[in-house]
Image (tube, rainbow, N blue to C red; front, side, top):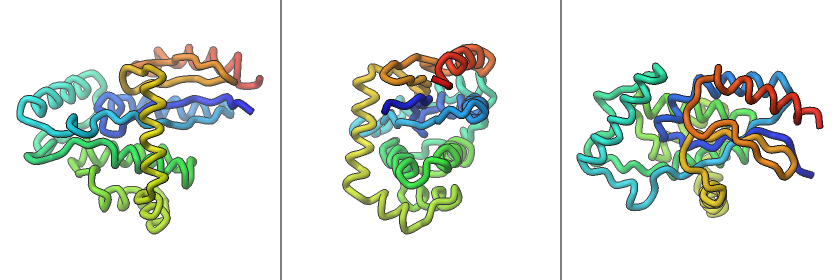
Length: 212
C-alpha cells in the first residue's frame, strides 16, 4: 500500500537546511494537525574527496553561511567554524539520521534539530561518532542501540541507498520537501522558502490528498 506523506530531503550539515529549520518546525506542526506523516531522506552533501577543505573552499562555504544567516536570522558561530584540518564529511551525520529513522521515527526530527544546533550554533564536530552518540542520547535514543546500529554494515548500506534515491530523483539541492500520494510526488519546495510561501501550497495538497 502506498502512503500519503511528506518527505523532507536534508543534509544535517547543509547550511540552508539549518536556515530552513524554523520553517520545518511549522511544517511539522501543520502536518501533525492534519494527520499527515513526515519522514526524511538524507542527501550526502559532501563525502569522499569533496569533504577535504582547503582555504578557498572554507572561505566559499563561510560566505554561504553568512548569506544564510542574513536571509534567515539563524545563528552561526563563525569564530570557531570549520577549524584547520576539519574534514567536511556529512556521511556520519546523515547515517545518524538513518539510525534514528530505523529506531524511532518519532524522535528523528528532534535529533536533526540537535545535530544542526551542535554544528552551526555550538561549533561541535558532528562528524565524530562520539559526538553523534551524545546527541542521539540527548534526543532520547538508547546509547547501545544507537551505537550498534550506527556501526552496522546494513546501516551504512541504507545511508548510501538514501544518497542514491535522492540522486535518482534529480534533486538539485537541499532542503527539498516532497509530498507523496500513492505513486505521485509533488514538489513543495526545492531550496529555502519562508513558511508564508509554503503554507498555501501545503494546505492545498493536504486538503486534496490527506483523506484519500
